[in-house]
Length: 158
Image 1 (cartoon, one colour):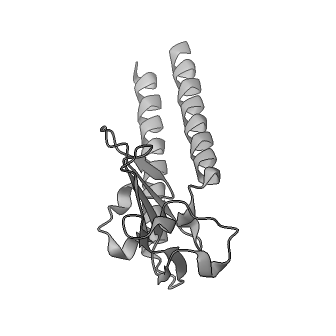
Image 2 (cartoon, helix red, strand yellow):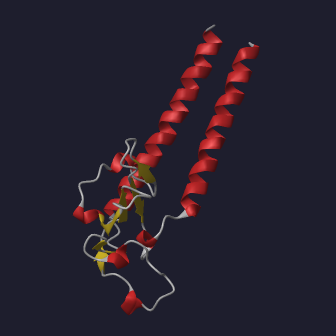
Image 3 (cartoon, rainbow, N blue to C red):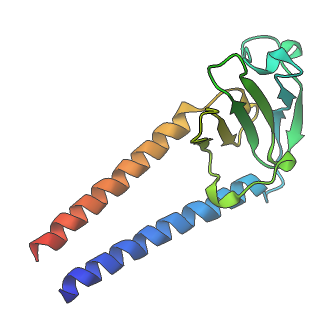
């Protein structure tokens, strides 16, 4: 029984270290301590219909307004797939952000408003949701689940 306990303690310690690394990484990325700036769209579809759907292949003079940002770009969607849909694009400098949950992800609301908030760190990245980051997050999660499953199987043999 002592051996089983030590495996679980080791597993949770490694898990805690991995989660802590992501938290530190997210904070450094969105605070942008390097001083590097990026360009983010800065608009609200209530005031500018172009903000709802950005045509990335259109000339820049047909794009919504943008600004220089020292943090991450943000895309906020409220009431998705409804006539009330609203899209806001901005920089994290304009928000109060909990950096412990931000790391190039999209956070979805759990209520009927069907909202979503996405963070990213490349020029004009708040024009769309990056599938690349979602795939990386998915594979990281699957690797963690597989490692946990193997650990449980190994502990079960003792």
